Image 1: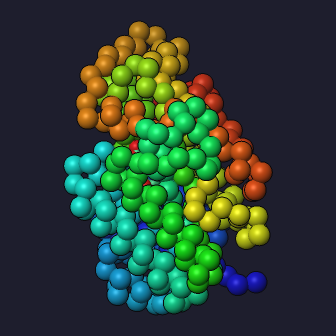
Image 2: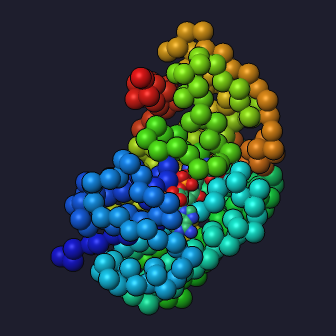
Length: 314
Ligand code: NAD
Ligand code: SER
């Protein structure tokens, strides 16, 4: 059996840290090379190899892939929805060119598998709001959503045209306690826990009834690894799979936190992120992922809230 050597690009980010640690558990510490533009996340220090790298520098990326004998790439470097609206050109350039660099090198070096996440941000105001299906009207209104939708079709193209085994999930908003989120519209659902513990109150940048699809990080990591370990013949969607965990509003998560932290207060001051959130579906139909490779979430709003507070407690 071939010993896999994995490169994680964007390993110091919210998903990268936890995914790198999970992959190191499965494949062995030395088999998973973490890389990022910024410094190594403290949680990764001493757990395996790290290289400082810019995914936009294709030559450097290519050299690292050859030098390290890389057989799989997880590409997580991107600019998320809220930051993307502040600098659309940069978001488009990183989100597109980073992906094309990886897909080209994967094709040339016959990389076994590539993972690249898409997002619920591909959907726009004309997509169904409830139980948004895998295939539907998709007209994103953020540069982030446009870049993700275009990226999905590049993945599909490289798979069908060049045989690159690239797989993808449309993550909902991800909630975690290990590494901070990186500038998304769903970040409120992480901030709220930190503020609840420190201040017992939170001012939310979305309105009380803004329902969004969300997922707890352990489910997201498991979904990613299950997708990547599924037999290739099961992966029938080569753009990106809808995956769902839960759906809630700021008012609902505040109520759930209040059950554990009596007296917790939430107030609302919607900003520019409200219109981004309003353009996305409230919940996702992921029946195609369930049928193709057996996806099923574990965490509910209640169990996630208890686990988050337990882990963030001083
Ligand atoms: P993040 O911002 O926390 O992490 C991204 C990492 O990429 C950062 O550590 C950053 O330093 C690094 N990076 C940025 N530019 C780089 C470059 N040029 N070269 C190398 N590294 C660079 O983001 P995240 O939340 O971990 O998201 C990872 C992926 O998952 C992204 O593609 C994102 O769009 C997608 N996603 C995330 C969520 C979520 O809720 N977190 C939801 C849907 C999709
Ligand atoms: N959590 C991400 C964001 O809000 C969704 O892709 O940008």
